[in-house]
Image (cartoon, rainbow, N blue to C red; front, side, top):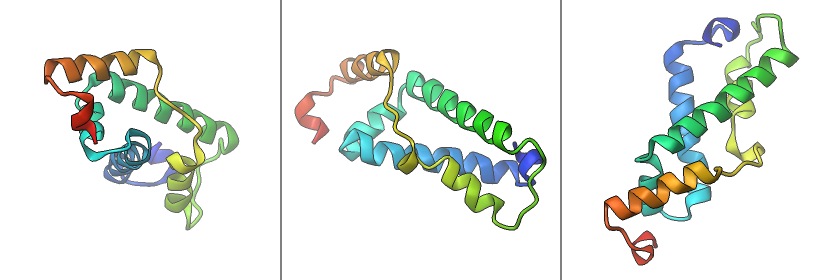
Length: 111
């Protein structure tokens, strides 16, 4: 995607991490819960798949290499959780619960 959009790999990696934070800020409901989600490989595998699916959508809609000035802004919008209506699947939830048990975290500590 970096080559297709003429963006740096660093820019795309940072956006990947920033949008995960943005998603979790809204979805998790607390900073403590977000930390648990981020500590699970299941979340990152799921988030990567979400990201790949969005990239496929971009490539399908724009098969030619994009060279417009606002491509970085558009790429951010295309990946913004604000415009995605998604939620983690049961595998991701199971990883979250497992991590809570491993770290002996209670629901009360999630607030």
